[in-house]
Length: 267
Image 1 (cartoon, rainbow, N blue to C red):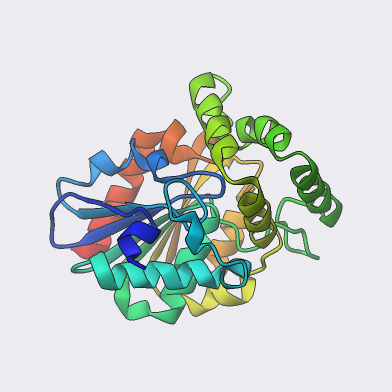
Image 2 (cartoon, rainbow, N blue to C red):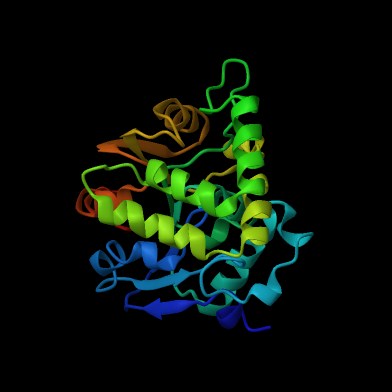
């Protein structure tokens, strides 16, 4: 199967380096439309849909392959082989930050830098580690999702987006969630919220920007600080913003922070 078709790959822009954008859970590549224009004059830009999301080929969804985030990381490396040229800067949101991290561990030579927007290596609180959710919280979230996916989407998407002063963005994320295949979304949610990639974090030696909102229910500030402590060659930047999607709700500041970081890496 063609990688381009499997992941609904879109290539734009020109430049000596490639910037790859990977969306979060429940979303698709359209979520990058505010950010990509800031870079496609100087970079070859690649956006795509994770298999099972957006316009990807749903027939390619293999529950065994995608029973861990490594399956998505392998897809990412396939895409780089097919589409990327020059140094690669990976920009991931939410769960895709860990997909990118796994790819940098497997093939560090393929990446110049990684940008992590709202990252979390583990959503569960564990001893001194604050992931943001107790086990009962995660179990309740997954049970509700299993029994009433559309209802869960309608209630959770606005919370994830945040920014109550921007209701159009909250509605857009709700609509995106509701368009997903419920069975695939349920499986992906379990893989996402029950994963623990803390052991993988120190293995990634690729320079990283951790970009976080000051008030994020899904990835609390303590998670960003944990990553900064344990991820070699990382920089932490906190945007004063409510929600989990600063690339949509605060795109100008997000792009400026990314631009400064990338310029320093590629100079």
